[in-house]
Length: 177
Image 1 (cartoon, rainbow, N blue to C red):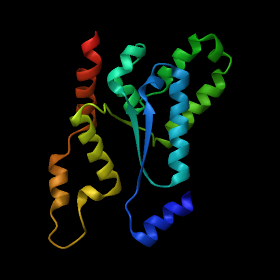
Image 2: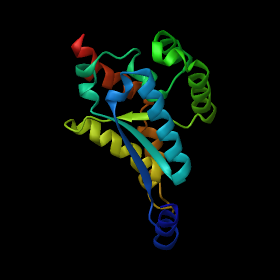
Image 3: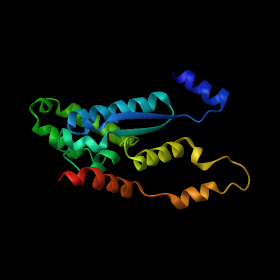
């Protein structure tokens, strides 16, 4: 697969980005969240492409169970020691305390993994994800030709990640409370 990716990029000058869709259900349990963190990290390292991880079906996350933390914890992969505290309360996970701690340290040491959100029925959500993907593969910046001012327009229109996550949390998660 890596050879195919390199051939598409080098021989055909395609701008490729890996988009890794993960069901937001996996945020509802600490053990499954750790597994998607490891899967995402492994995929990122093996493909050697710009990479966008996406929590899909974000609008339905509370219909399957409450999240232990706010959405920003899961999208920005914040301090995983809080996740370890939850794992210590679980009987099965308690046996694997050192393994879980090592896996969390591994993810934090690389500091590569973060997630975008997606609700496929929401045009704004799809559009925001498309902008992130276009930015990851460089398409949003346009061509590198003299007089191309598109990079300045992108810099001016850039909204912060925390503002976007806060909007998503308010729109989809807080309405159930």
